[in-house]
Image (cartoon, one colour):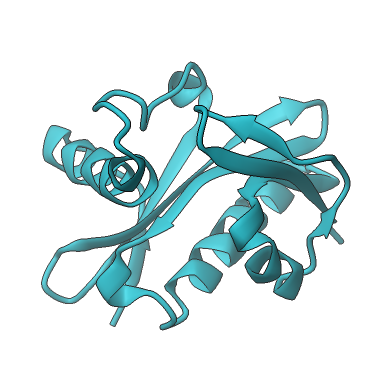
Length: 145
């Protein structure tokens, strides 16, 4: 069973950032530290934890502009992908965005992840751009009801 929680303790955040690095940065040879950005302090962080207490997925949300939530750093452990954890994390941040009164959410998705986000109602609204020299990203948005 998967539980979604907010990291609170130092150990929670250590596991949270370790998974972000392992999935989103390490495979491309990026140095430690690149899994974090300037928006960490103003973001809400969520992590999926399995019955063993292992962090198997992560995502964060912050207000990009008035009424627009930014979903970023969505990552699921390779051993736990295609099991609905990403969907659960997206549903969690969208619910939180609605609680904040946001009218839409968006994400800079890897081009390889656009099908996942499209399946959840997002649409491409920007042109692809290169991020960290190796990854192509595109802006995607979803209106919230």
